[in-house]
Length: 505
Ligand code: ADP
Ligand code: MG
Ligand code: ZN
Image (cartoon, rainbow, N blue to C red; front, side):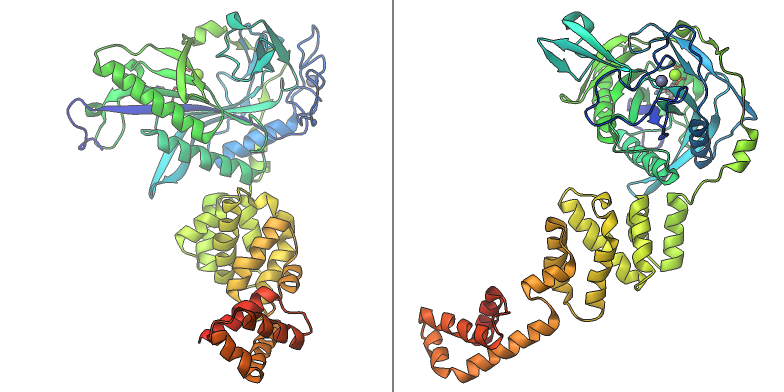
């Protein structure tokens, strides 16, 4: 990398702070539900604790700690004997206590790693720390009667009034802070995808929940000549580089877009001899740009101090007791070994836990390579084309197995199975046998129709001659003859095609 660095070349350096909502039934310090009810009214999923009423005391949710320990183990992080909580003080209406309970000098997890693949290369990113904290509420600035979801662009001073909703307040969050190990916005996207996979395998995260993953992305540009031969960058260089922190990123794609924008914005400034301001910027998803929000806050601004309402937490024993399931990398390796799959198929089949489970269920009944082709190529391909996911067919495993069985037992052609039956199953939610019956696709049925076509041709030489002389009615007559012979069970379109094929051959 360093060798390639030309004189004057600037290289982006990126570090992330990823906020992950942990999936628990109740909030992290009270008994309120974390599950938004459908169309719930604001400020209905609240209690004195998450509203920060005077005298209300937090009680730590064991399930949140358990989930956080799982994440730590999956990141191969150090989990200390004892961890504790701090108050991070700041005044903002989404924070009813005027402080957030978080962790400071003794986070639950430190020094972890996460490896991922990007464009055929293996990358490993160091995770500096991952700690447990509470989510603030959410606010909406309203202007001319419209609630701007892009909260901080419609700044407070342009709003007529502001609404606040504490339903989200107190949802357990895990903040995962990486070292500045990324060199490319596209790497960030691949990392986030991998992180989500791991969280999903652990069963501690619901990606479909709105705002369940929120990212602050830090970027600075440094001279390529500063990168050492082994790819590392001196600490002094990292510390002295002016960086920006982009907030309000809520998707993998958004992270890449925001960082690409930031990279060229900073590069342009530096090329023109201007300085990059050390500041916090806001990502505007609609415009794909970032705008200045405020100068970067510093640690001392937050007046961290110990949360006296929560005793230090002994976690040493949990580390031993809490088991984590097989993770994506291990499962991919096993798929290669156990089922003889190639790397590409193994990767495709393990990227989501539900897909891997689905595949293994199929592979238990059929030849693994057949199962892999059906799940990885046919099913995932057709789902992708329809903007559907495995979640949409998770409960139709039996129907899918039946489809493969029909092909396996030679009752259905591969072509019909792929092109007609599977598609109808997905489009219309019908079972395979139903489609076969309706379309007359069963192989046995088909040969019966073929016989009828041959018979009709043999027994009606006049009509055949008329057909060849271009008489339009002749074909219809022959179709009628075939229908009669099959007792009307054949599909007229298919009969039409078969007749043409036979007559033209
Ligand atoms: P702060 O105290 O300002 O929050 P930290 O040292 O805690 O700064 O780092 C916060 C985030 O900034 C981390 O994700 C880290 O990887 C990232 N970071 C640190 N230095 C740089 C840099 N030079 N360029 C880009 N990101 C950086
Ligand atoms: Mg920080
Ligand atoms: Zn509550």
